[in-house]
Length: 194
Image (tube, rainbow, N blue to C red; front, side, top):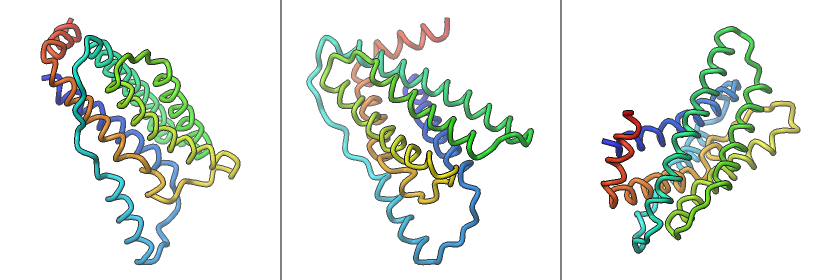
């Protein structure tokens, strides 16, 4: 029961990222046909994920699973709230590209800070943390590079999703890890229902 919810949260984070990236790009498509093919190929390459890796079980597994799951929930909630705020501002006509990009940068910094604060004790936990951090570091470089360019939108879709394959792999790895501890999933389901 919890497995699909984790997947939905992961997908929510990805969708939120995509919505914000799209909202920042108000330019018209003026690329030639050849320009369109090449970025799409890069996008597809980014979405290819590695197979799930096997790690030895440790006494700290459930601790790290709980921390990573909590991070995912808190960050998804924060991203959803930010998305709602931007949509409301856009509907009211008060949203500017500069504000949207600043909020995206803040969201990225929050993700990285929250990840750094995790006290993970296992190799698998740190592996997942590293994959997620790599994705957000790529996003930070992309948006920080735009900071001084008068809110010029991020146009290259391949740049927008750089590292997305690793992020998706991290979600798959966490889901696989959680499936090895069904008692943890049941306890969290009861806890969240309370």
